[in-house]
Length: 143
Length: 279
Image: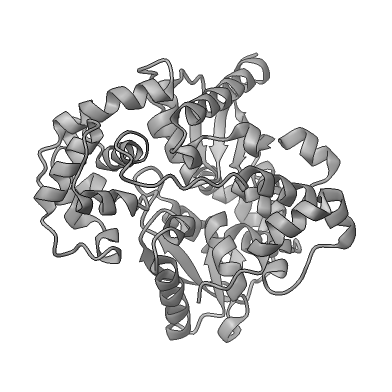
């Protein structure tokens, strides 16, 4: 059972706007999350300076532009979650995976350093799959 | 209405709608474990996680979905939302609930079933003579020990030999599909491990892994099955798999295509079914 947090804002958009700078303030840019991340190898960044990359992570979460290596790293986040336990500031309340997630959002929507990957066919395609397989009763009850 | 522990909402997410049999089997397993199940999913219950590039829209989707589950808790006594999809689960825990007051708790289906495994165990009477490699990912362990929960359930199936597969990056295969080469590497390592351990079956945990690996069913005589299908098989329930059949060369019934909208089937669905396998 996952205990849900009490609401800290009126909307998720407002929460993320608040959480980014809060998490960034806890981050010391030590590079531990970067070192623990298995996706670093997939995007050819193992030789990069983790402190520099995570300094960019911190800045990105606050809405500032980040170096290209930071962008490449957050863009490849696959939610492996190893960063969470590796973070020495975890006990202070730093959720490293959430920080990366927020930073990725900023790179998409604030600094525009990541291209938006829009798929307008996602919902229509899912609805076709549903109608291929579900009975009328299931469609009415479940969706 | 008072919230009752056994009354749950099974929130199966969006993309699991490709796998209708897996939704039905999940509901059946939860019911046999003693839960009163109401199922919900699809775009009307979207968590918003796939819409990070549209923060306002994603926020509105999250608010709508939390409101629906709050209503189910308030009016129907369903105080537990049971997830299937790890993206939905993490998004609810980390982003949706801090931005929307939630009047319910969240649990993953494997947690509930593993908790009542003693109740399910007597129903697992049919030997499933397979040597099964469990296809695992590293992610989601931050929230739920899903690999252990599924292994626990599978270990109760008579005749089934379970082998732990390599733990791949990401929380499920769809997360790897966006990074060039990452999904192919995971698929390659999975098949190599299955061959090295003499496995005849690869068992997926999540829908997106099943979706990506379905096209490999039968390669090197290794079959692809999801864990709910294996549990059902042990109950003597025949578990068909339409999506897997379509990905390996089959096609939906023409009447089903006409009912779904033939032109949209050809433009939206058929290209996915005919895309190359990840290996």
